Length: 279
Image (cartoon, rainbow, N blue to C red; front, side, top):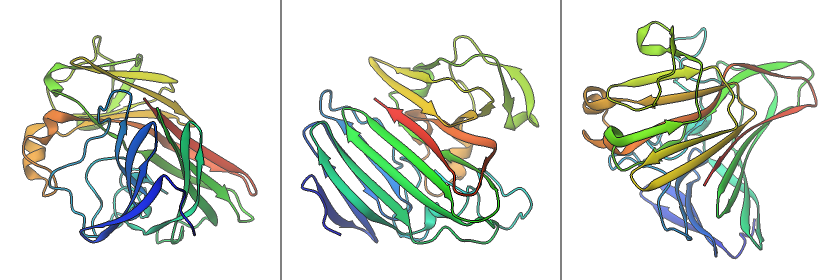
């Protein structure tokens, strides 16, 4: 297809990158994984997303950082332990379906090469729609094209760029969370919500808006179509054990994920949209 005027394709290592550069923002999207790697609004020129300096851009391994697409399952597969964590579309090649320049944003729609894969039986059409302007709106749209209801889990597994995890606060969450590091014990959300150790938490709440406060920077996050917010930071020991993450990388990132962890059912002919807005 023909790209819009604000879009261009640029090879990097073994991956084709879609570059969006309009009056309001600059963004980089890897077509391997349909994976947003960078979003910089021009009104403040602050990078909102974190990308590992050791990320593998070999079109074989998932990319560490940015906004990985977890679908059609989040985390480990429910019944087959040998399948890749977080599903298979983040290692699919995606393609641009359409691209449009609007006065306040560029709108891009991507689709994976296939939605079929071991571990998932549904018949679907999957789309990733990006609205890139003063804010980044990302929509993962799952349409049931079969004759039977389907159920799946998913997430926009966003790595946010921060100054220092030791001086970072997340606001907008309350109630209890399930702690994956303590056998899913139910624990009260801390106030203030700050970080001093490895964190892997599933908040079974659906706040519309959250804010990451890091130094003088405030990153605002809105979510729709989710049943959970997942908060993750690997901390020092786990970072050192990860091949695609620098040892000190944990200090400059915080994952705040708009997620469906409890299962989303979609009836035949219907669709569901998981959405995150970053500004």
